[in-house]
Length: 117
Image 1 (spheres, one colour):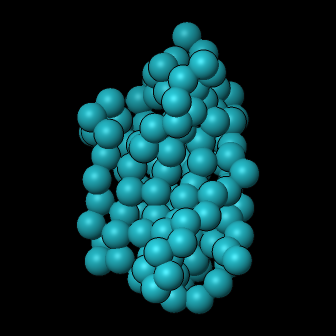
Image 2: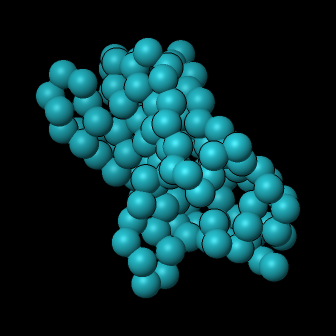
C-alpha cells in the first residue's frame, strides 16, 4: 500500500501562484508515473499534468505554459507549480501514483485550490 500526502493548496487571487507538493511512501519512487488531477464542483476529475520515470512531462491544454510538474526522486516528492492562476483552476487537486512494477494506482486525499476573481 502506497500513501500519498498532498499539501500547498489554499486561496489565491487570480494571477497568483501556488505550489503543490505530494510525498509518496514506498520504494522505487523514480520508476513510477506521477500525476496531478483536479476536480471542480459538479465536474469530472481531469488530468492536469503527469511525469514519467524518465522525467517526461505532459499537460492539459488548459494549463500549458502556466503549470509545471516536477519531481524530486530523492525525496519521493512530486510538485505542481501553478502560475497565472485563473478562477477556472479552482477545485480539489489530487496526486496519483501508478506503480511501475505492479500497475496499481493510488490517490492522495486531495488539497483544495480556490482562485478568486
